[in-house]
Length: 173
Image 1 (tube, rainbow, N blue to C red):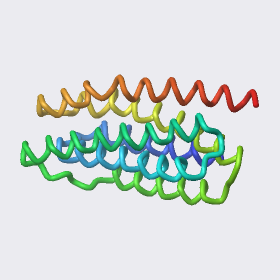
Image 2 (image 1 turned 90 degrees about the horizontal axis):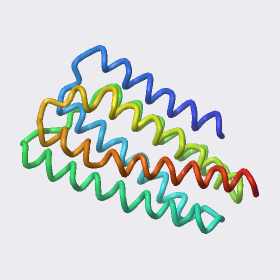
Image 3 (image 1 turned 135 degrees about the vertical axis):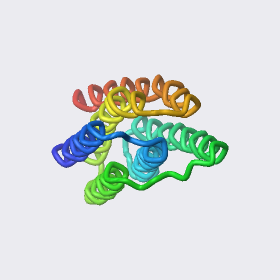
Image 4 (image 1 turned 180 degrees about the vertical axis):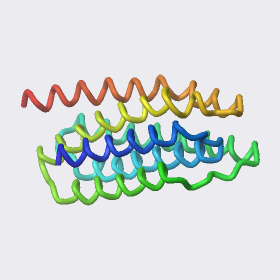
């Protein structure tokens, strides 16, 4: 499972890197942001129910709450700006990778589930931070969209740090 999680995150990075050679529109960025958050919400909802480690379960619940909040902010902003999120190869790859991760997680239980979920969260949050820094922020044309990306970036950094701490803790047990 760890390999599958890392592959999903790498595919996301490659997909976003491929788009950076092209101009990524604000509508495409909106779709990427909403999809990336939904992928983490879906995994978090599964982990909130299936995780056996109380800290992993608590982290999953936080992921659901935080990423739902970001999606609400993004939806409010794109509605205000009259921007319709535009499906694109990156958002499609994110969705497919998220579905693959959920399928893999559903096949696991106990500490194997906890470890696989946390490993994926580490890889996924690092990939999202890289995408924000290398593609989404440089490509965003609308100042309010760019400001939203800047505003949520620290939360993604905090999620990554928390996931890494959990990863270390699970490795010791």
